Length: 170
Image 1 (cartoon, rainbow, N blue to C red):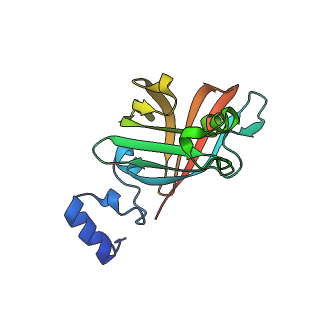
Image 2: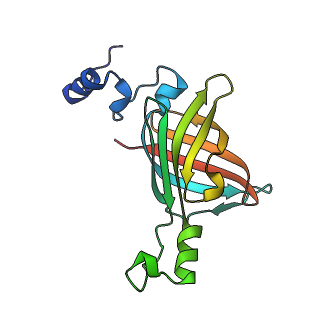
Image 3: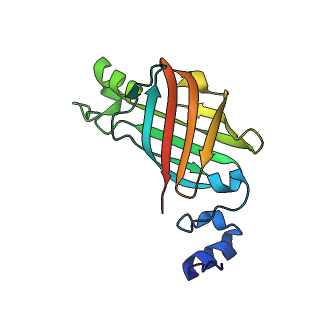
């Protein structure tokens, strides 16, 4: 069956040399890395305990974005939707409680990534993070990707296994 590619997507393919820049075209062919490339929004980030119970790490409606480019760079930002504004309206004058809510309510990091096609893992090579203990660290995650969903797990995270689910932005 032949797939018709919209004209605007075809122009993007010619300019960038990659179909991955057209996230709205559901293409499942290619390597796992090619399938990961794109922009993703967070659906859920849950701690899954040994007994199967789930606890949302960033609330029931986490906000955030993950961007993976074709040359191996990424940026992730995850946040609770309900973080209160600072009373002072100045981020440099937050109270201890306000600062704690921000630190515990969001995480961001960027760097490069590699995909292992054989064991189906993605490794984040963290350049810098809002949690400085991750700076310079490699984090390997088993993952699965489809045209519309990216999912990975983080073992031994916050009293269980963290499960991250993202949806491709169109």
